[in-house]
Image (cartoon, rainbow, N blue to C red; front, side, top):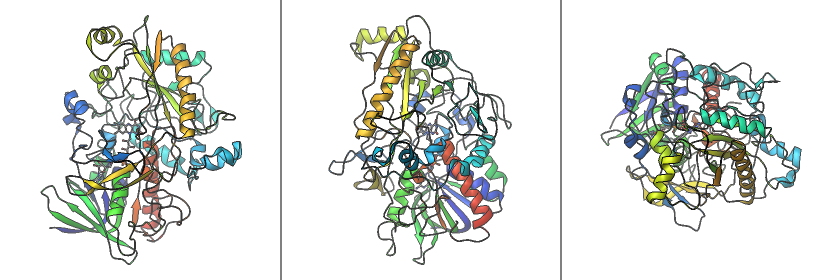
Length: 573
Ligand SMILES: Cc1cc2nc3c(=O)[nH]c(=O)nc-3n(C[C@H](O)[C@H](O)[C@H](O)COP(=O)(O)OP(=O)(O)OC[C@H]3O[C@@H](n4cnc5c(N)ncnc54)[C@H](O)[C@@H]3O)c2cc1C
């Protein structure tokens, strides 16, 4: 058993942890990072091994050894999820993510007041725990800008300081300057999506991605190989934490990364402060780090689980949980899809970065009038392979045939042979309102490889507001498929209520210690030297992917710690 002392211990070295490690290290703070997985490098990703990364999902946690369970309601039995949506190595999810990098809309930060102002309070579903964020888009804009420029994001501005620009996303919130890099090149699917969307009067644009369209900061540009999601980038063009912030953290001389280490408890002394963390080493040893500041950056399941298992006499319902909000308001994206085939053209959907290649934002957030629609909020629409993962083989495996063609035999073979390069999916990624009874707690029976209770999700997106929104958006997808020139298009059946991509909530932020777990900086209301950062703190989500917002929040927290907390440790206001 080893005990070490440091200024700061950061648990989890993903999207959040890497930014904090670099920024706090630069400010002269001694930082130890704990990461349960290994530290890989760009050279490890040569060969684009589909068996390893797509079939076995080697970059995600092993769903059997590190289970997360799910049940649709409190009365149902929970079962392990077959695939897990987060990282398992230094760099976390950013190593194998699709790198789609959005800023949220202004009204994403004030969904409750925006809804009441435009449609009246009766528009908010009675069972939803909808609140505003304790910060505005304007508060976060400087940190979005830093994240885009320091990490490297390719895109085209649609709103420069209030000036709308066609060809970019005209619905985006105002930005201070252009993206650091021009948009990635569009493939055939992007071009026909753009054409079809224009015919319908929509406003399509190239999706912003943290993938280099040109060389940047010594890294080469994208090769358009198509192996992004589920894979690490073989040239380092994906702006993952592995090739951006971790080298910066190393260069400070103040950062030590301990890989293969599983944190199992946050330690506290019952005086209202935390004293550090305990972890299992790669050899199974039990070790302790004593730290002035503890930062949890482990993604939503472990951010919540670590607090639940670290309960004390003072906090019998989970550390830092005097509000009783810990583990509540779980949200995830819901993604209706329409599949389309084309007779007269090749689409070659598997070329180039595969996630959400081209987008439109006309039916997202409050960008359209919801009067009379029986739902609030919306979704971002894009063109993609049916499933975003796995390069050409993944694309083929996820090609759902139309009704009447089975997924086996000669008819399936003929379908694949004819349509492999003439097939696309039009997808809406829709927001999920928060509901207090969508929760993360500890599974009473399932344990992981370290003997810790598995995080258990109780969640079902099939609520009237979400169902009505999905029906509306699926109709828009069908219109788009037709306008794109598809000869045949059909709906994908929706799943049975399980959480989809981008899980958020569990340690909600707010401006009131009685109704939230952390403040806008991710600082615990109960324990000022404990920070919990990531999408677990989101009070509401957006139709957009979360990571750029997670990263902007990480920059904002780092700034507050370095410039204010470090000088005067205590509650940040
Ligand atoms: C396949 C896939 C594609 C995605 N594509 C996109 C996209 O295109 N755009 C987008 O915005 N988002 C995308 N995401 C989501 C994105 O990856 C996450 O939002 C982001 O990585 C979350 O950042 P984080 O730092 O909170 O968690 P992570 O990046 O997951 O990092 C958490 C780290 O903590 C470590 N850890 C966890 N528990 C412990 C513990 N107890 N002890 C020690 N270490 C621990 C994990 O191993 C992990 O490395 C995608 C996710 C997946 C799975």
